[in-house]
Each structure stands twice: as structure tokens, then as C-alpha cells.
Image 1 (cartoon, rainbow, N blue to C red):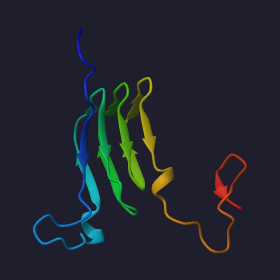
Image 2 (image 1 turned 30 degrees about the horizontal axis):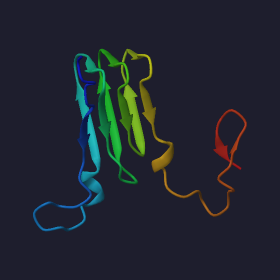
Image 3 (image 1 turned 90 degrees about the vertical axis):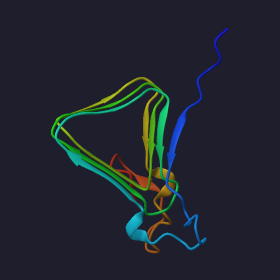
Length: 116
């Protein structure tokens, strides 16, 4: 019987491991730019659980998010020729966007999902 593989995680730290200070906002970005393709393998998660964190990928080729893989951050930007999402893969930005502006209810309205 083969054990179920454990997902791999790339987590960006909230604090500097050397002195415990908070990491400035400028470091809360993962940016990939280049020529070629990106394949996120099955069961791999790229996670930045910090409010305001951005994961940005700008490639000339295609992006493939493998089966049961995940990309989680406040903002996720994929710019490529094509994006393929395999079964049960996900891109999640909903839980990390912060509080809604004071003038809105924060309740999605219609198909755009904008707060009312």
C-alpha cells in the first residue's frame, strides 16, 4: 500500500527569522517574469498567507496548474498565452483581501462580485 503523498508548500515568512522583526510590505511579493512555460506540479501549493501579498507571473508561454495544486495569496496575477487548470486545482484570493471599505457592505452583488 502506497502512502498518500504530502503536498509541498512554499510559504513566505511573516517575520524575519534572524531578528523577529516584521517583513516590510515590499518583500511580500513573488514575481516571475520570463520566456517559456510554468508548470505547477500536482499536489504543490504556493501559499503566501499574509494580507497584501502578491504572486505575479508574466511569461511568454503557458501556465499549467496541476491536479490538486493551489496558488493562494491576496493578489494572484497570471499573464501568459494560456492557463490550464487541472482537476481540483485552485487559485484562491478571497480570504486574504482584507476588510471591505467602510462605505460598502462587503456583500457581493451580481456577477462581478463587487461589494454593495
